[in-house]
Length: 66
Image (cartoon, rainbow, N blue to C red; front, side, top):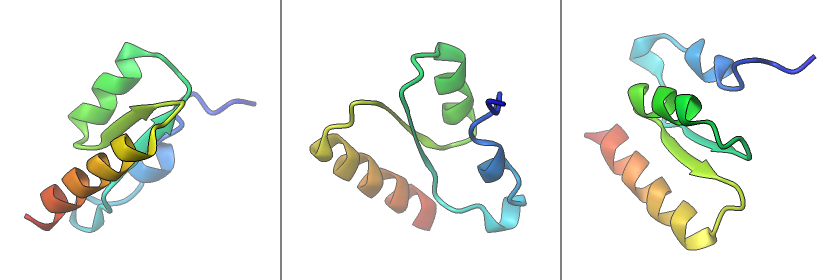
């Protein structure tokens, strides 16, 4: 069975211990992207370009430390 919510593990963390998250997916679903943004996660569609991943990692970590 395919998990309808591939990010359910990340959602399981309570608010005080949320790790920085970047959702990398081959799904081209605008609703999924909107949910990622709503949760404060980074979002990348495959194929991932290394410079884009590095830039997003930096952005997510800076935001997480703030």
